[in-house]
Image (tube, rainbow, N blue to C red; front, side, top):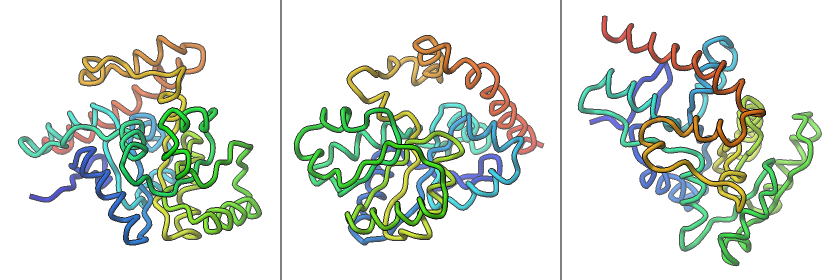
Length: 246
């Protein structure tokens, strides 16, 4: 049985968190880079109205399902061969920072990433090779500086915490310039994993309601994302399922 499926024209992995963690660590061991994209409803919404963005994320080497609606869609389109649970950026980063031999990693963006990294202990802090939390403008000069620093610090994993679409644009550029690094766009992962963050209860995660938990915690910042953009992404998924059912 193939370990990929088609969701809205994207090749999405059917594997679960542990398999994706092994994929990342194996690639690190082989000095084989990748752009790993955790596909969520916000990306679906953007892709439904921005063909250029959709073409860009199709270039990702690994696409995981970050969101229960994608898991449900795969179950509808491929009964009995559904995605093995979602793989969120939060889950994957958390798992990677807990492995016995944390690979050298770098962070670009994020809210107080070092504060979060320190909660994982001295071993993880030591593995942190480079952190940049300043302004990212994607200029040629900055891209060259990023690639030089990542190579100089021998970063094998790069967490890009800039949000959509900036983190995807940066991942695509660095994929060419630092081919030995595994690049992951992770949005607000460090904020969620940090001392002031927190995940939704498991029952909300399983029921696809984590968005509601986050909205309740920060309605002023997130209302547009969840109440306007997310329905567009859900409709994109529904149309894909309806086409598949014909």
